[in-house]
Image (tube, rainbow, N blue to C red; front, side):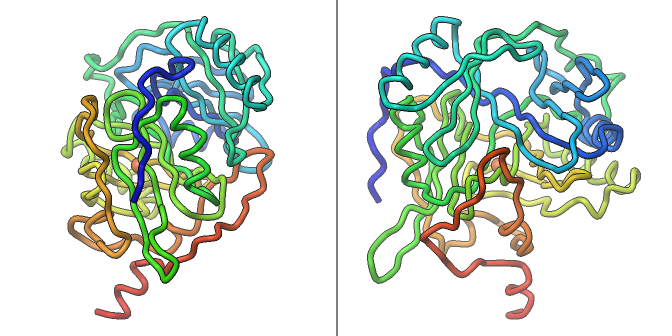
Length: 333
Ligand SMILES: [Fe+2]
């Protein structure tokens, strides 16, 4: 499978996955889920919006919850290094025919909004107000005590097209999955990063663009198991959709919860560095260890259900494959 060589001098400097903006139906229910179970900290709130951050985060927010009638993801947000990168990004997108707009967003510096080649709504910003890092306020820890936002996994109707958009912007592929059929080898998923660990942005084959999950890093596996106990105690036990388990891709231990609106959050115990120019790791879709090193495969809904983006009707992918679901596994057992 051919993964292009890294672009080491991109036209502007995206530094990391920064924040996710979700539409939710009941702000109080969402607040309870994200503070009491996930352990996020409230940075600010008004009558219709909640701004949250992980316990070690210095930036103002990594999750924005906005009240609305229908669950959606409004956009994903990335940080760039400096305000000058916003101008360079606007120039670059103008040169390749991608429409952009600079908007005022509360608690963010100048913000550039656009859609990628799959229709994913994205924004870039270089700054946010700084808030106190709360990671040493151990007496205030709640639930999973999520420390920092790490990545998104999105479903893509054409993974190669997504890679073709982000790769020239300096995103490096750490791992990928592929399927094989009579026509040859097909790219099924790409794990792309800017911040030096395995991924900031993942595209996997499926009706897209849709937000499959966003992920927060925990201190360790003990917090991960503790989060499951807290979920049970708070009545969120049935919202645990998958795990605990250990991914082959990235090597992280994980759990996935569905929030009160069905948005999926992954809580995981960190993964390896990907800083030097190491070749990407390829996984065959036929190898179940890519997803689960041990334990049971995911339920069918984990593969099929995802959050739609505002203003982006999902398109069906050209690629199809038999899904290795828990339901099929149990039929075979
Ligand atoms: Fe993930």
